[in-house]
Structures are given as C-alpha cells and as structure tokens.
Amino acid sequence: MTTKSEVRDGMRIDWDVPITMDDGNVLRADIFRPDDAQKYPVLMTYGPYAKGLPFQVGYVAQWEGLKRDHPEILKGTSTNHFNWETVDPERWVPEGYVCIRVDSRGAGRSPGFLDPFSPRETRDYYECIEWSAVQPWCTGKVGLLGVSYYGMNQWQVAAKRPPHLSAICPFEGASDWYRDACRHGGILNTFWISWYPVQVINAQHGLGDRGRRNPNTGETIAGPANLNDSELARNRVDIRNLQLNHTLIDDYFKERIATLEDIEVPVLSCGNWGGQGLHLRGNVEGFWRAGSKQKWLEMHGLEHWTEFYTDYGVAIQKRFFDHFLKDVANGWDKEPPLKLKIRTKDGFIERDETEWPIASTQWTPLYLDITNNLLSNSSTVKEAVKNFDSMKGEVNFRFEPFKQNTEITGPIALKVFVQSTKADADIFATIRAFAPDGKEHLFVGAVDPNAPVTQGWLRASHRKLDAKQTKPYRPFHVHDEHQPLTPGETYELDIELWPTSFVFPKDYSLMLTISGKDFDHGLPEPMPKLYGKSQRGSSVFVHDDAVDRDKATYSGTTSLVVGPQHKAFLLLPVIPLIKR
Image (cartoon, rainbow, N blue to C red; front, top):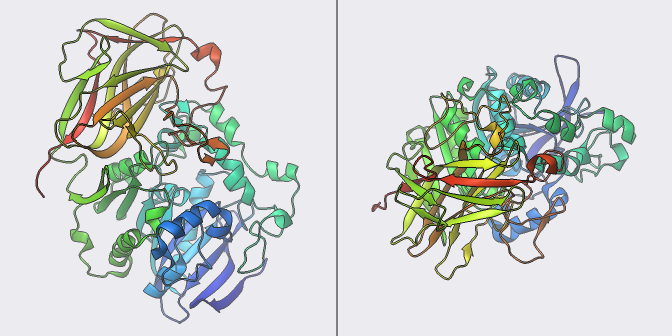
C-alpha cells in the first residue's frame, strides 16, 4: 500500500500515511493540511468506519436530511471530503488546522485484529497522537474531535494522558462501555449486535475488492487484501457472544471503561437531550467526573449528527480549540461551565449555567399512588400492590396538569419497591409528556424521530449501589454481582433515569410509565427503520435478546408495592422560572 500526496480542494492531502505501532502493526491515516511549510495544531479521529467512505455514500438518508434542513453545512466546501461523524477538513484546514483520520486496527485500510474499544485500540490511539505531534507540520499540540465512536474513545485515551494531547471534544460520546452502551442497568442493549455488521464488518480490513471505493482515490475503502469470510471472522471479535457472556463489570469491561478522574486536559463535552439509550449519560458523567480543571458541558437537541456540522456547533468547537490549541485570547476560558439548549414545546432556549446539577434546582419528589395510578405531592399513600406482566405489561402514573410552565432539567431518580414471582425482574421506566388534548408530545431524538422525555432501566438482581458514587438524584450501580430475588419478598430498587430537559407548558401533564418492556409510543406503522428495526420511541436501543431476557427467568409477574414503609417516588429536578 503506497502513500500518495496531492493538492486538492485548497489542501495538501496525504493519503494512506503509515503509522507504525509498538507491536509492528501499521495503521493508515489520511492527513489534510495547509499546503505550506508552517506548523499547525492537529485535530484527530481514530475509528472503524473507514476514512475513505464519504458521508453521502455510506449514510445517504442522513446526508440528504442534513442538506435539506441545514444547507449552511454546504457553505465553503466541495463536500468531497465529508466523512461520517468526523470534521469536514475544508471548513477547518483554512482556519489553520491539520485534520487526521486514522482507520483503527482491523478496519478500513489498517490491518490487524478488530476489537472495538479494546485496550489495544486505546494504545494505538495514544501512539497516533504522539506520532502526529512530532511531525514537521505540527506545533506539538493535538486535539480530538469527533462524534459517537470518535467521541467515546476520546475518554479512553485522554485518561491515559498522552503527553501531547492538549484538549478533547467528545461530541455525543458515551464514557462508560457498560452503563451507557452495552448493558443498561444490567440489561443487554442489542444495539451493538445490530450495529457491528452494518457499520463495522461492512468496512473491515480485508474486504478488498468487495469493499466500496473512495471516489477521491479510486481505492477500496477496506484495503487491498482479499480475505475470505472465514479469514475475516478470525480477524474480529464476536460482539454478541462477548456481551452475552460478560453480564457484570468484570475484567472485560473494566479495561474498556475510562477512569474519568484521570483526565487532565481541557474538555468540551457536547451531549444531546434526545440521546437516551446511548451517549447522553456519558457526556454528562464525563463532564461531571473528569479530573480536568477546565471543562465545559454543552447540551443540544435534534438528530445525533446535526449540530456537529451546523454553524452553531462548529462555532463552539472552533472557539474551544482556537483557545487551547492555538492560544487565541477569545475569552473561552471565561465562559460558564454549562451551555444548555433548554427544550421547549416549540424549540430551544439557549442558557448558561454555573454547575451540574443546576444550582437553583428544586428537588421535587412525586409519590406513586398505586390505588389511583397517580403521582402525588403527598407522601401519605395507602398500602397497595399493583401487578403487571414481567415481560410485556406496564403501569402508568400521571401527575396533575401543571398550573404554570414548569422546567425540568437535570438528572432524575426513581425509587420503587417490587416483588416478583421469579428470581429476577427487569424494570423499564419512562418519563412522558402529554398535551391537554391527551396527545403525547414526542421529541426528535438523537436517532428516533419520536422519543419520550427520558428513560431508565434496571435489572433487579443488579440493584446493589456504589455508596461513594451514588447521589440522591443519580443512583450509581456497582454491577459486580448478581443478587437474585426470592419470589414474594419485597425489594427496594433505585433506578437512574438519564438526564433530560423540557419546559412543560401550562396544562401539560407528566406521566411515569413503569413496565417490563421497552417504551413504545404506540403510533401506527409504518415507522422509519434503522438496522431493520422499526423506530418505536426507543430506536435501536432495545433489550430484546432472547437469551439475555429468557422466558424461564423473566416471564412472570412483577408487583409494585407502596405504603407507609414503602414510599415509592420519582425525584424531579424542577428549575424555578425566573426572568433572565
């Protein structure tokens, strides 16, 4: 495989540059830089989606929607070098940056064994950062900027403290491979099983002539080697078997979960309120727990990829990196730590805050009244039990219509007491919004066009809490042992619902749904599909593996218990309405 250098679209582009790792494996990178002899800071991504696969070829529907709804992304660019979830170099190179895309080990044009989010990948990323910093065109400062996979692995490598890493911006990137991504509350999220063949195996190194081609070079995006199906299978991990066989946070997960407190570089964590099921929790936790002295949390809405490319998103990214990679005195260091787009019925309101959770939060418990299926301000409730089918039933609790516009922004916790006829039970909790006419108000989520306010999950046998990490408003589960239920006995469960933001209009009502299954908005088909799955409010972040949720263990009856000794409640972060 040879390296080619050319000037195109106002940039010097070096294709397939080799970067040799400490074990001798050679990764390949494309480098976009100004065509002169000066030095510039680097923005880097490392991942498995193939650096040579154009956004508009690999993700046609997303690309067409982005162009249609946000034509600003087309300004000042030929779009020839748009790549899924990475920066458009034509918008960054003229601003004095070198943009580097590295195909991760075993993916795209980089040979090797494919093992997503593994310690070997993190080590490779570390070495790529250090390699780039000493190149003749680099100032020695390296920043990381990318979406999703290209955000998640930023947390991992930043915690290893590469000497030349200067700042990171994980844009909608989960920070906990277990809690955020693979097992919600201990329940297997089958997203990764669906994702792997469509987005990763489809670009695995060794596909050779079967791979799609980079229209800029004419080369196959997956390397020149032509491996057969058996050879390709031997060169990658089996995601489903790994995730089924590792049900707790054991060594497999421990070596893939970053110690966020070890991160020292400046952080701009950009999250999406509609990202329940993946990323949302990780962006908030990453900001909250990172050891960095300089860190910011930005929260937005709309689709998963949109704000990364809009003028709004790019402007924030550039101010951050201009300050920390180019030493521009643009006042970024004086910005408040939180930059929030508060969700409303009709759009968003931009607001800055000083801390997370928001300092003015009024923590408001709403108690479960099982007798009347209500949420109540009163903790005085009658002794009662409500049963539902453990795998397909649900119970709804509605709060009275709000008497004024009411903002709920922040983390949410739910305490319930349950019994089960089996040795385990899965609890799915969803916060929903309803208009006065009874119609549910659904949101454009990160990857579902009809998402609820927020969601949370817990497998009852995973109820054990980490006393040091747990807050009243954010339970933190250890996931280090299974604690089976004794049928008929009552157990206290603290459930984390992922952070959210919504200003409930006057006369709107809030509903809590507790069920034994994934949220379904109930809208008629047809619905858009992703990975062949109909998007019914939980997108592809569903928990439908027949082995993980086998009927022998989970098909029974779950009972909610309330009473003087069992005060079940939903803890809401109510933000006072004040003039700003």
